[in-house]
Image: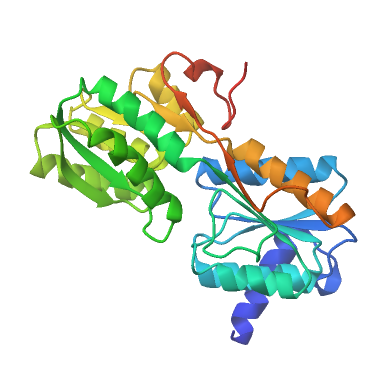
Length: 313
């Protein structure tokens, strides 16, 4: 790493979490590293982890890797140099993140992964992820119902390096492909991005004027697709997302997007911090490394109960 870049990372770390001189963390600090907080899902993760850490008496370092594996590696270097006690991580790629998590482990710092798995076991202490396959099947079943079991549809895929993108797509198709009158006429990645999804949806509509539905790998892309559909005067198109964001909740309540699938980001992040605390105090979480949390279908029936990736009773 060149000197300028190292200085930039150090200055960023100091400004974000107010570490003491020399990058030393306080006696009990947990690093929380996620993709960009521009996505409300990842913001909810960071907020949930930070709130639980504070409740348990820890200070926090909150860092953003922007889905860049190189930047993630540098931020883990920063956390290691600061002497954090544990790392909560929503990683920047299933394969690309293994070395970074191993680096933390080799430095004696345990990692607790949320939302996305890595392609190795025994490196992180916990990998706590939503049951993406189960959730995708819920979303697909609702999509089939809304489509009346027939018609042309398009699929927006997530980032190819993200394991969840493939799992969700498989879950969707294991349900939808059972209905021969449902025909996929377009399928393209929008890399979890709202602006990219808008552009992709515009192109899909131009090439396939008969599209009746869109199933999306996440809510951010669903919002981009819906904006493009509105701009084209195609609010008749059925859109289903995945995540359970407040933006999609509001769209559902306003009669726009029809459904999404809630994965409990806030609760998941808090669970990771609880397990980190348990591990730091006892040397074990008492649980398996890989843990699945089931998802919940959100539609017009229960959308009003959804708030910040959590469903009230």
